[in-house]
Image (cartoon, rainbow, N blue to C red; front, side):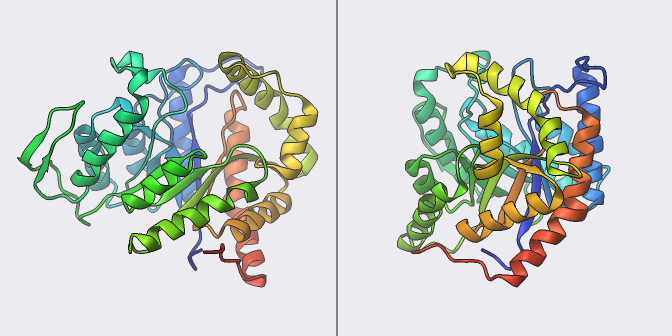
Length: 352
C-alpha cells in the first residue's frame, strides 16, 4: 500500500428513477452523472470512473464524451473508465480518444481496461464471442505498444498490423495511466504484471480477504519480472446514508431489482434480503453510515494492501439524489475517517 491511498468512485450510468419511481430518460441520467462528478470533485474524491455498456439499463455507451464534459467543469479529479471494453474496440482509437481527453483535462485521464462482463458490444460491433480471450489479448498487446508513444511496428492475427506508425495526439506526460480490471482470474493477474500495468480488482461479492492471493500473486509476478512496483486498486459496490438502517433500506429494493434482472440473464436464482444483509455484514457490499463504511474500507485496505479504493456508488434505479448523498458523505466523512483509522493501525503488507 502506498502512503497516499487514493479514494475513487465509479458508476455504470445506471438508468435511475425519480422520487415517484418513474424511469428517467437517458439524457437526464447522463446530465445527472455530470453533476455527480462535479460534486465528487468538490468534496475531494480523487478519481471517477464511468462504465461502458450497450444495453437499456445503462445510459453511457461513450464514456469518453461524458468524461470530456466533466473535465470542463472540474479541477482536480482524475477521469477514467470502469471499464473500457477493449475486446470490441480498436486500440488505436482508444489511445486517440484518451490522449485527447488527457489534453482537455490537463493530464487527468486514465483508462481501466477490461474484457467486459457484459457482452452486448460483441455482436453490436461485429465481433465473435468465441474469440473473447484472443481479442482481448491481441488488442492489449497492441495498446501496450501504443502507450509508449513512439513509432509502432506490430503484427497480429485479428487486426491489421502497423509499420513504424505514429499515433496522435501524444500526451504531455508521455504516458497514459492504464489499469487492467480483473474479476478473479489468476491468468488475468499475471497478464497485468506482464504488461507492467496497475491492477484493479473487481470485488463484488464475498469477503474481500479471499482476494489476498491475487494481490500476493501480482506482487510476486512483478518481482519475478524485475518490474517496478505498481498500484493495486479495489472496486466494490456500496451506498452511504446517515445510519446503517437507512442506507440498507434505501439500497435494498434497487439492489434486488438489478441483481434479479441480471440474474435472469445469467441463470442466477433470485436474491433475498438475508443474502443482502449478509453481504453488507461480511461481504463486499459497503453499505451503511459513514462510520460503518469507513471501518469496512479500512479493513479491506489493511487486508489487501491496496493503493486505491473505488466505490461503485450507483445501483440500478437508486435515485440521483441518493447518489449525491453517498458522494458527499464519502468525500466529506468516510475518506477522513479511513485515513484516521489507517494512521492508527499500520497497514499489513501481503505475504510475498
